[in-house]
Length: 436
Image (cartoon, rainbow, N blue to C red; front, side, top):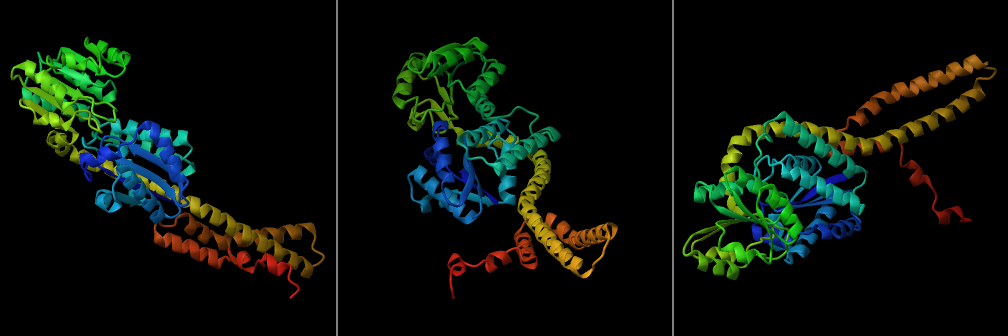
């Protein structure tokens, strides 16, 4: 079996394409089940976040599995494959495992080392479990992924500072307004990113926080933590003109804040500027909002400038983390290779044992009148010789390289020990009943 990884992220695909490919949690099970129905794909998991959409696949035919994933991306985007192919990447075996480990550790994130991605990777694994598309290999792969990410984050300083997309959005607001104390902020959404934004805002002196959400109870729960005020999305326009900063992060599939709504609010502000940060994918805020006078609109890709300073200061820690992840990846790949060599070793031992028993039967015909002690001595000798001759082969098979050379050596072992001979010698059903 082989592992391959197919997808795109914020480094390879623009925001408008990532929006097209965004898939809701409700639709993931059906997608995974469709993937494993393909002949080349045995197991599948799907990671979908604001910055990436990626499949992890277990397959006996990586080329065919990658082609199936490419077709899914084209269908999901509603575009010809040739128009999105340059935005897709695919990794096989070593590179696939290292990529997944790096993603879980936050080394491939927009904000280097951000901690939220590990939870998102765990969620993708849980989706695969619930969908029945995670088998023995993905189970082991994801357990190793979580352990590797934990080791990277605890053994280096890559995860020491609580930096994430929400904190970068607040940092951008500080660059525009300077001191945030005395500003009124509206947070749209009540999920993890919204909570993190509220926490950073509160830590920067913001006292007046409005939380607007589709479900009022969720908005109340978050707003109460910061002595804020809860709103439904329908109530949002009534409070918008009194808001200086809007940070939006919902899971909506369509815009929750339209340009006409913002235009009406701006008419009441008499030239006072408004600052919007949309960290949702698909975007929550109509991009045309940015065309209005005295309005500053930033989306998740606009955070690159803020993020760059964070990345440069953490790159040395990231290199140390990557070295640790490489060690963990080698351990997993050795285990995966053992799955292929273990059945081979067992078949060789079974065939050699059968040959030993046949030769022992012949020996007993030629060596007559052996007492029980002599028979046991010959038995021990035959077993010892078998183990002695097989030992170098068994050691070699257990330590095969994880590349084409290892595959070739396994194929050679099957020929040398005639493991496929019985298939060739077995007569066809028509031959068994033929009278010649």
